[in-house]
Length: 170
Image 1: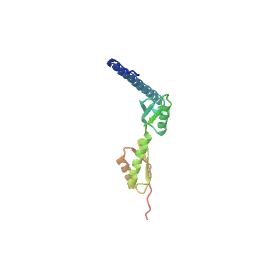
Image 2: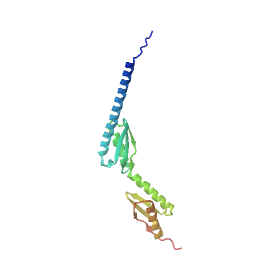
Image 3: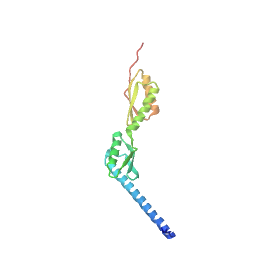
Image 4: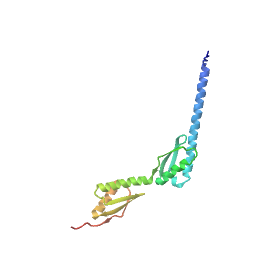
């Protein structure tokens, strides 16, 4: 025959309190380990000047989220590899943006707008705060129109390498 023991109210409350203490201690340790890991990864990232724009945080133990902006894809990959090299990192979520990515987006927007305006023979290459216009047009008016089109959609400084090649008279 089995004996079933009932708990007193005091024993029940004590059990609940012990469970709460264990859970709170685990959460504190969990938070401290995630914060410590993020600090270690941040120190590793800041150890390389190419990764100065990279930051990180840890949402769960072993998982690092990279944020911020670096120069190019090579630096973005380097930041991810650097984070993985830190002991305790099990997964890296790389949300880093790149300057060159922004340049490419601006470049595509300008080139698409030039094409929509009938200036397919011209193209722009964006590097930093400058847009380099190249190609050939058949008139000075088209060259000036291209410069106006670019100025209407972008605040970049335009360096004009385009040239005018007059079309056939006949």
